[in-house]
Image (tube, rainbow, N blue to C red):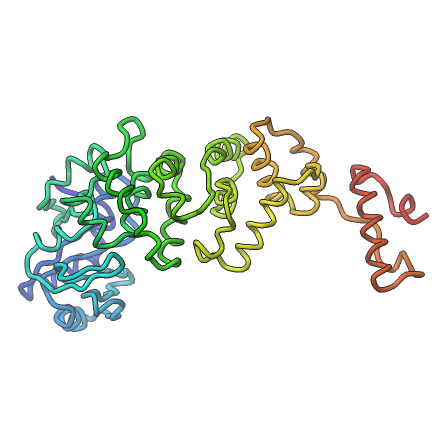
Length: 379
């Protein structure tokens, strides 16, 4: 079998591979670029595995006129920029010791060692410069079936890096088939070792959860995570019940839902620490959560939050309450409304008294459906 695509034919990519081959080393495409090419999906990143050591890769690439950046040299990775395209070139590796968070690796000259330390069989696919597929672990049938399966023993792969639990669900969300379900052996291992998630850095957990939640349809994976007890390890109190209805309502209303909105739909405790959200993201999460749970009218939601966030709050409310969406036109009206009273219109007031009066008048104006004019409000 051969893979193809514009990414494979890029002149810089071909020149880099050719330079390494001429020097007597392997240069094999691996992982996402091969996987996505077989599935007919977009290839964004080009990773290359090689039997050459990082310093050798550097010498070969620089001799060919390419820029080399030692992005992960301690792990055997350098980034080679060839004719405008970055390539992550990593030496074949084998694990020597792991603690569930990081691994001590040794370089290898054997593709079998490199394949055996990868997470899923669909990620252990290689291709040479001409596109000919190399499948040392027979992962192609799993990819064609869209079955996310751990390499070798699932429990062993997970104990090497507990982040693979979250990656298992994320890959199922993007590449799995809903009609055939999730791999039972992998799911059982994820449930058994889910406590290991708590040993991971919050930054790694947050990055993985963002990718999972932004899948076109993360609901099946997140629901299985909840049943397996994994979701509670990541987001205490979260419940995926409203996530599906919320995303359906977003689609029906041609509205995009960012990752913060999807986190609000999951409920539970504020995810700021659990996922290392920024202060801005945390404020937005609280804003949307409070607005969705408030009694504010659709018009007030639009006025207070703006049309985009206001609609998000309105759709979240409908998803939580399991009710139809009503008031979109009113929300749009509120988003466009401009409070007609200014501080200068109340010359006899200042300080806190001025602020309180402006708020009181604003509440009257909102309650009127934004109909009261300046003259109606201040006489």
